[in-house]
Every structure is written in structure tokens, then in C-alpha cells.
Amino acid sequence: MDHYTSIKKTLFLCSAVLALLLTSALPKSAHAQFGDAGEILKSGVEDANLLMEEYLRPFGNGFGADLNSGWINSGRPYKKFGFDLRVSAAVSLVPSGDRSFLVDELQFQNLERVGGSSETQTAFGDDTPGAVMGVFGDNPFSGFREEITRFAMPQGSGYPYVPAPMVQLTVGAVKDTDVSLRYAPSISVDEFSMDLFGFGVRHGINQWLPGGAALPVDISVQAGLTRLNSSFDLDVNPEQGTDVYNPFSATPGVWEDQSIQLEASGFTGNVIVGKNLPVISLFGGLGFQTSTVDLSSPGAYPITSFNPDFNPLDGSEETRQRIVERIDDPITLSYDGENSVHAFAGFRLRLGFIALSATYTQSKYPTLNAGVGISFR
Image (tube, rainbow, N blue to C red; front, side, top):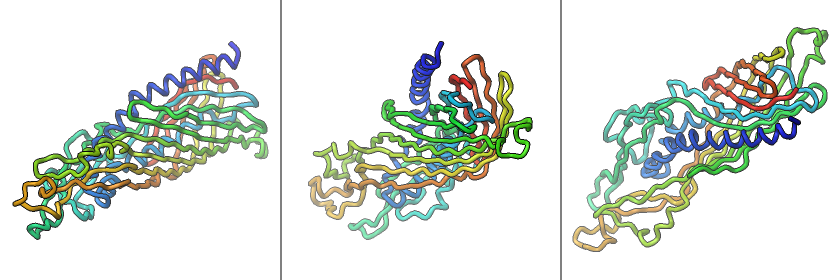
């Protein structure tokens, strides 16, 4: 089998596995994180951002850690025209302190806890009920601060893991250097879509060290940058009731373009020490990483407020006690990854041209990245 045939078959395998991972893991976890979280938008712009920031914090940090993993599967760069093509899945572990938060510690404008415990789950916390939040406002008719509506905080996904799949090609260049490319064209599965691009470079430094050629191990430095865009459709509908006036009832299409948009980037730099043996390659090292995850919610969203035109003596729809109002693009959040210095270790096992690899990275959000592909040195 020539190299080109192997590449074509492996690209097909990678695409199939990536699609399977997206279908089975990402949309389900995204639904747990985003779909039910649409209820939070009932609280208005300022309070919704406070709650969303806490609820989705482990997603931002965990996803950033995922993007920075899996660049390395050996201690030595590939030889000129050698290559490695693989599909991998990264899974970061959410630490216990980021699986829940206390709503009573947040400074809200219009929200109060009206039921349940102050401790509520984040997106990757336990699958248990959280706090019940009441939205309050000044009733223009009575002159008192009263509850307008309420909602229950969404439960966690039930498992403290943040998954992310990716495909990577590494090709050997000159001077003991190889370059890596991560790429996934826009892929849509149900209500979820994503695209990914990344670039990395690794350089062997034994050649620059006195007596480096005689060292029993290979020493390399590596850096990589990954960018990812994704979106998940939301479905937040206006509140209904005999005391609610909905001025948008004749134009329901105004709510159709609701979504969560995610833009993530991660950068990592590493020093690697490894040893290539006939079948297995072992490696480890130290590094640092940074990441940024930006979340936004383009579209129009309904909230419920007291109707300033409320008139209990008027039976018309327009004078009901509560009214549906519209807010646009309410969520704007940015997460800077909490991982900085990290240690890692891993292996690559070659079975002919098939290569199995795994890397464990120890940081605040520990990450395991495992992959399969083809490899020619």
C-alpha cells in the first residue's frame, strides 16, 4: 500500500470517526450546557450574563484545555517527508470546585432565590435540581417590588468531563523539524456546527547541544495554536398566560435566529524529552498554555416585564398585567483559561503503519488525549 492510498483511507476514517464523535458526544453535552440554559435569559441582560458566566465556566476552561492537548505523540520530530495523520479525542476533567457555585454570592439586579438550595450545578456538575430564581421588578400599578416570573436553574450534565475531537496531520521538514496542521471543515450535526484550524511546529535541539548526538534521549521544543468556531441553536419562546400580553404574537419568526456562538483559541509551548524504540515511543515534558473562549448569543429573546399600561378594568389584551419584551444579543462572555504551567507524559504504539497514541496533561483541568491514525517516519 503506497503512502497516498494510506492517506486517503485514513482521511476517510478520520472524517467518519470525527462525525461519530460529534454526533454522540458534542451535541448531547452542548444541549445539556446550552439548551436548558436558555431559561436563564428570562432574567434580562445583566443578570443573565452573571448566571451564564458561572454556569458555563467549566465549559470555557475545559474546552481551552482540550484545544491545547494532543499536539505531541513522540519525543523526536518526524524525518523529512515522514508524516503522522490521526484523529483524536481530548477529554478534560472539571475539578470539583468548578462543578457548582452559590447563587447567593452573586450581586443581581432583578433576581432573587425563591426556592431550592443556594448551591446550584454548573454545566458539568451533577444532574440534580438547582436554585429556583425569581425575576422581580417594580409594579407600576401597586408601586411595590413584586415577582414577575421565575425559572429553575438548569441541571448539570451529570458527568464532569469536557470532550473535543480533532484531526491532525504532522509532516517532517528539514533540520529535525516537523509541522502540524489541525483542520476540520464546517461540520453540522443536528443543531450543532463547528470548524477548527490549528498550526504547530516542533524542533529537535539535540543538534544544538554539546554532545547532543550522544544523548540517550531526544529533546525537542514545540509550539501550537488552535482556533475553533462553533454554534448551537437555541429555542427560547415567549411566556404564555392569560395575564401576559405578547405584542410579537403576529410575528413569531422574530425568535427564529437564536443561538450560542463560541469562538475559542488556545496556544501552548512545550519542552519534550522522549525516546523512540522499535515499536513504542515514550515521552514527557513541561510546558505552558493559554486559552480564550468567547461566548455570545446573537438573536432576539423574549423576557417578561410588568406592563406599564396594565388596567384591571380594561379587558383588552394590550392592558394585561404582564408584557413580553424583546432583548437582542444578550450574552457576551469571555473566559481566559485557568491552566498555565503543565506537565505531560504519553506514548505512541506503532502496529505496522497504524499508530495508537495517548497523552495525559496535568494541570488545573487535567486532560487525556487519545488518538489513532497512520504514521511513517
